[in-house]
Amino acid sequence: MAQPKSDRFASIDTLRGLAVLGILMMNVQAFAMVFAAYTWPPAHMDLTGANETVWLIGNVFFHMKFITIFSALFGAGIILMLGEDKTANLGVHYRRMAWLLVIGLVHAWVFWFGDILVPYAIMGMLVVLARRMKPMGLTIMGSIFIVIAGLLMWLNFYFMQYMPPEQLQQWMTPTPEMVAETEQVYRESFMARLPANASLTAIAEIAQITGFAPRLAGVMFLGMALYKWGFLTLRWSFAAYLGTAVVMLGIGLPVTWWAAHHHLETGFAVDQMWIGETINYFTSLMIAFGYAALIMLVCKLGFLNLLLKPLAAVGRMAFTNYLTHTLVMTFIFVGTPGLGLFGTVERVGQFQIVVAVWIAQLIISPLWLSWFRFGPMEWVWRSLTYWKLQPMLKRKGSEAPPPTPA
Image 1 (cartoon, rainbow, N blue to C red):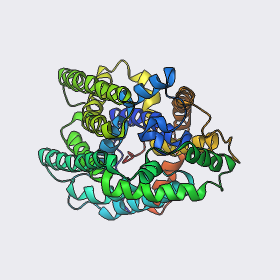
Image 2 (cartoon, one colour):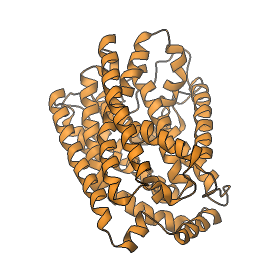
Image 3 (cartoon, rainbow, N blue to C red):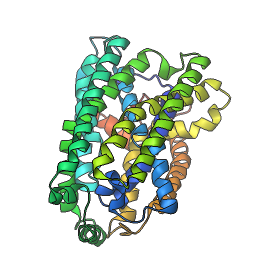
Image 4 (cartoon, rainbow, N blue to C red):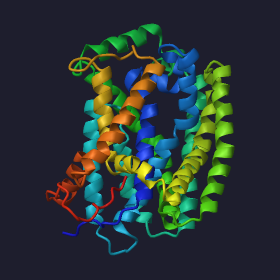
């Protein structure tokens, strides 16, 4: 059976590492607080002073930015693994996506409703069919999908203000009694909160597949285009990367900052939510592109590569590190056998936990890869895909392992 290609790009690994770490900054809220607090921050715990500042930083610099980068790299990874040859073995790709789907379903229904692997696997089965398109065609198609998803999101937030009060409380503005009930369930034990997690998983997966999936697909198409244009492989000039970063961040960050302050100034009024969310939906694309250009710029400098190696190692183990986030956060916030701190750690404390995880993964990932060719879950996924145990231990002088398509 054919094995995957062995080409690696340090620039892509580094960008992937940044993305998987950045995603945790937003995901931690969905582990530590009630579901509604992710979208409507006043739903749970304090939102003043330093906690407000943490929310503001998260919303402006992280919200939807790093998942966008991760999605683009997933699309680029499909071409990197398969190439553009029409004779490529698509069976291997579909097996890879099928196992990703299985792992994602277990992750979502047993551990955490916020799983993103399931829609990634489903979209990965579809976007692969466009891998031979020209970059401009991929860009146009991706933009159409993104606009469609943006329209669906806008409609959702705009008409939320017309929901019956009972329905709005259920999904957006829970009462203190509802919050207390959720806290009790999550603090009790891992098993006790499974029904609640299952309920949220069903809702989340339906919403992802029907509403968010077009954006995922659209960004994957853009990632394919960026790979073909050489953006992700350092083929652009220093000036081009610098100009892209200045323009994208120079426009995206101030506009997103205004949108975040609009949320704060209106007290997160439900009838005003659509304004900030719609702005962030589109500016997040600009900011993600700007972040990516900055990373490419730093990689192109060359002399900073040593400093980027830990980040690249995190990227090579992105699958393992992403799932490790769930294990660590579940242990911290869910009850027995965990610590059961759900609803007790405010946003400042959540940020401190995230930084601790970042530091740990930046240390552990390169140490692990100094001995092994793959991260643990990368090895499992690859072995399942090829129906053969992949060589795990690193041999002296051996080639770099094949790339990860995520």
